[in-house]
Length: 175
Image (cartoon, rainbow, N blue to C red; front, side, top):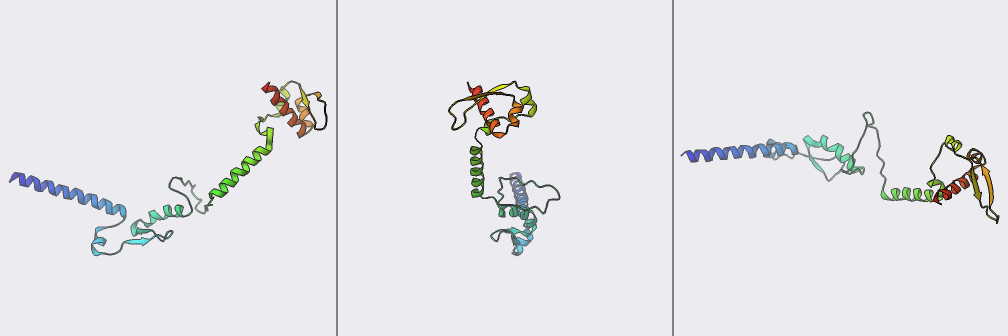
């Protein structure tokens, strides 16, 4: 008789645990036992996606997530917004726009030539450097002309001389 009483109490405990688990699942879904027993529909159509049906009690939690998905923000991306910026708008940037930006950046980097590999220096850095000999070869001139200039003087002569200076310094550093 004692064994049977132990089995019944174990079954009652199991049923209570399962009932508790089922209640937590229904609560997570936004459903309740009463509406399920009465057969009332407790689902509501999502305002952002016609194919989503969400429990009435969890519609408010669902709306922000679905709104981001509709504008193209995936669950992998994190949406960070500051307080007071609720009027922000989302801009969809598809892959063709991204590719166009990359292509533009690559062509502008190629067009800059040797300037893009030279470190930028402040005017005081140029003054601290010693005099240099700049050898340049002009197109159409067969001889090399050599001139001694200081970097500030070089900068005053214009961008063409500055590029020549940078090119010569680059050659000197590689030798």
